[in-house]
Image (cartoon, rainbow, N blue to C red; front, side, top):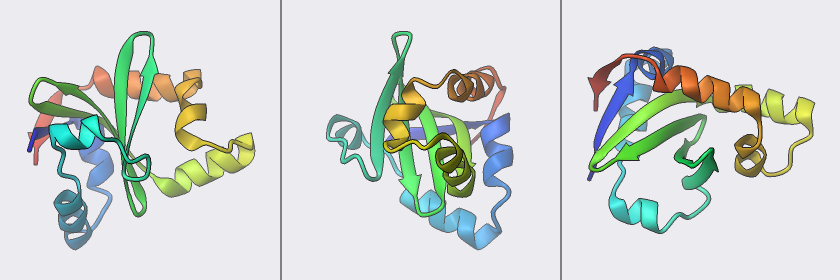
Length: 122
């Protein structure tokens, strides 16, 4: 299993959950090299942008967007699916990951996470 590090932004986003929900999500959000090599498209998926690889982990109501640096998962954003539903509905997007891959506003959100201070790990 890889070490998981949250930056300030993703830590704040996950803190919106109550403690029991956080524990449940953290129990589900465990990443191994095997998960990343055998993406199932449902729980884990991958996007690329300007030569960088970004992974997505989906848990019931939450989407974790992260990069991997050797044995460390660096979580850039944790977003509620409701925000995606609204976005997808307004944008008429069929394939969430594929469409986000080409959306400049999404990558701006991710870049904000990339540039945020890392301060928590699970």
